[in-house]
Image (cartoon, rainbow, N blue to C red):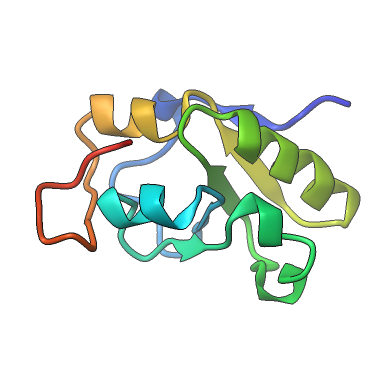
Length: 110
């Protein structure tokens, strides 16, 4: 299956309002740094929480793109309009894109 994927250079900065973001990393990864306004559903909970996934176009992210690729493959089969971010949050952070954290410290990708 061909997984719809975009590079960081293809993602507008700032993100357009109509583009949703789904972060499928684990809670500890999310806490250290994530995209402001993103929806957090760990990959292990995706099937059970499918109804929470936006029906609008959605950018799916993880740390490097592997878990989000799995999520995009499954969500595409379910009819969702989703795309994987190649390089994930590591690329997002390397491109100096805005992030927030839940720890009170400078956002980072762990």
